[in-house]
Image 1 (tube, helix red, strand yellow):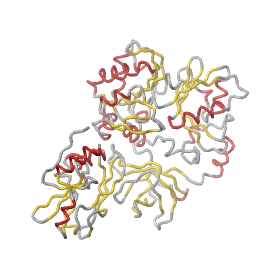
Image 2: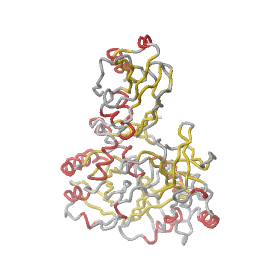
Image 3: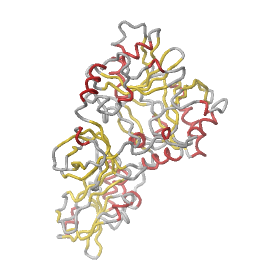
Length: 371
Length: 131
């Protein structure tokens, strides 16, 4: 299959980005700076990501709210004018269709979906409109999406906002504004555990917006960042990656995403999830840290101290920020307590590990004493 | 294409390991090409001193942010030293692949095996063709 290219393909090549296939898109996994430096830039200064592979659907019509409440696990009714919120969509059996971000707009909602799930999601959304006065449109092709992330992101964006009032855009809200003359929806959202923004604007303006942000942010340490840094940045605060940490075979209760499941409305999968919640899931997400040296990776088996298979790893790596070999995985409920000794099978050998608290890195919005 | 560095005193495998003979002892690591393609190295799984390997056998595993890759023995022999600095600082492999980022030292059992390897010029040519 031919890979899709974003409008910034030539720009990434000029920046010597190393292009790889991600969910059918040819995107930079890193620039010559390297993933570790790109990761640290976002933790300490700022990073810019081309995330145009993400999909966007518009959900409009007088029944947009009850329709989304039927599809999504979050209670949409509580969302105010400019709110943006994380949610899941589930199958009848409680397995996860996708994890999504819902932005409330004047005329309805914009839903951001994963690149790997765009076609599947659009079919899922479209096939559940019966009985609702609602229209779902895939606007991904004409909508460009960039992420500006890191503690300096607000300093950089503030210079470009017409009224220089970045702090009036609250966490997990959005605003329609103009950046360098480009009509933009700015969401104070992200996938890094840092303060930051996701920008939505006309795809025709992609190169101009990218260059404007990089140029403006240079003095505040802004650098372009690739997919490897995006993955390690989302992993440390334990934000799930669809296809790894959550799939159609995993339900939100197992994934410890129960907070995002509101049982006061009837959504697809509710009955199955209620049952799982009452009976307890068969497997649960844990965070673990290696005791023996070794790199835990996606797909490696998790073992009991006696060598019995108890689960599997969904994401693992050397955490760039804390410098430890840590991972996420699913195990039988008996092995979820902090301090429980487990093992990771690495190339046929059992390496000791221990169950630890998640997240590995506290996201900015949860830190105390923040401004 | 990136401008890679080569150590003219070393010999190379197609799988991007280098080996140098110093006072009869073989010292080995991975090339600048390898470290660049691997991206940031986070862990090197080294053998124990005294372990014996045949030329071309898996002698170590280098783990980067991307993947785990086997490292092959450039010569047959016995491991006489491993670079313990890599445990704390695996980034030395990226920073100085022919120097501080060395992997291990071997007591070679048959130096004529060096003839099976490429010199720097042949290796650079191989890398250019492969790209």
